[in-house]
Image (cartoon, rainbow, N blue to C red; front, side, top):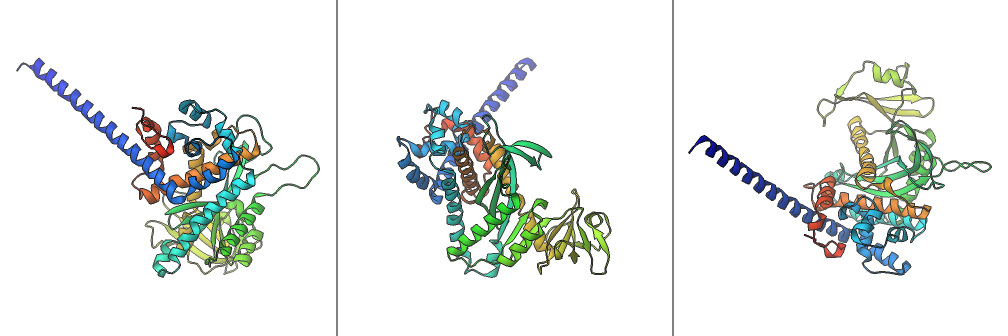
Length: 432
C-alpha cells in the first residue's frame, strides 16, 4: 500500500472514530438529561411541593390547564432550555402573562408562609427519625443554623423594596433588593433547608421610624422558627447559629444565650479588644499577627488553632478560637463563653459556607436577578419559588442522586438536551 493511500485510510478511520465517540457522548448526555428529569420529578413527588402549590394556586386562577408544568417552568427555567420566564413563554408557546399571574396569586405573607411550612415539613420528620438513635448517629445529623444576607440586582421598574445596600461580594454599594436568609445545615451539608426569608426595606424618607435592621430581622426569624419547631413537639438541643462579622452584636448574642441557651458563633474583627487571662490587653489585629502556642487540628491536616478564654468590654466573658490554615489568611471566631472545644467550633463554622452556596445557586444557576416583576407580591413569589427550586435541586443531587450528579450537571444537561427529554407530568415532550 502506498504511503498516500495508507495516510488517507488512517485519517478516514480517525474521522470515523471521532464521529463514533461524538455520537456516544451525545447518547450519554441525552440519557443523563432523561435521568436528571426523572430524578427531579421524584424529588418533587417526595417533597410534595408541586401538589401543594397546585392545590393552593389552582383555585385562585381562572385557567387551570397544565398548571403543574407552568409552576415547574417558573421554578426551573433551565429545565426548558430558558433563562427567564418570558423566554420560557416564547419557547413553550404559553401566554406571556402566565408567569406574572402565578407570581401575583398570593400576597407576600402567604408566599413566606409556604416557605416556612416547607422547612417545617422537612425538618420535623428528620429530627424524629434520629432523636431516638445513638449519639454517634445524632452527631452525623447535627443541625447548624446559618444566617446571612445578599443583594439581588434589580433591573427594570424600581420597587419600594429597592435601595442601595452594601455588597460584601463586590465590596461596594449596589442598587437592588437585600434579602436576609435563614437556613439549617444538616450534618456536613447532607441537606441545606431554607426555613425563613426577609426582604429589608430601605429606611423611609421623611417622618417615621426607621425600618427593621439586619440584626432585628435575624433575631425575629430565629425566635419564630425555634418557637414553631417547639410547637411541633420537638425537643431540640441548644442551637448553634453562625453568622459573619455583621451579626457580632452583644445584644443578639446575649439574647440567643438567655432565650434559647444557644451559641451565636461569628467571625471577629481586627478592631475588637480583649483582656487575656494573664492580664494582657490585645486587639483582633494582635491575634492575627502575633505568635501563639498553636495546636494541630485533630480532623483536618495542616490546620492549626488556638482556643482561649478572654474578657471583652463589649461582650463580657468570651471564647476565642484562632484558625491558621495553608493558603488562607488567619481569622478568629468569637462567641460567648462556652465549653465547646476549638475543633467543634471550627467544624460548625465550616458549615456556614453552605448558605453562600445557596445564594450562588439563586443568583447564577437559577437567575433570580433576572426577575422583571412589577409588584412586591410578585417579587416575593418569584424569590420564594426560586428558593424552593434551589432546595429541590439540592435534594435531588444529594438525596436522590446521592452525589453522583451535582446541581450544575443536572441543570446543564437539562438546559442543553431538554428537546430529547420525555416527562409528561412536567410537560416535557421529546421533540427530536
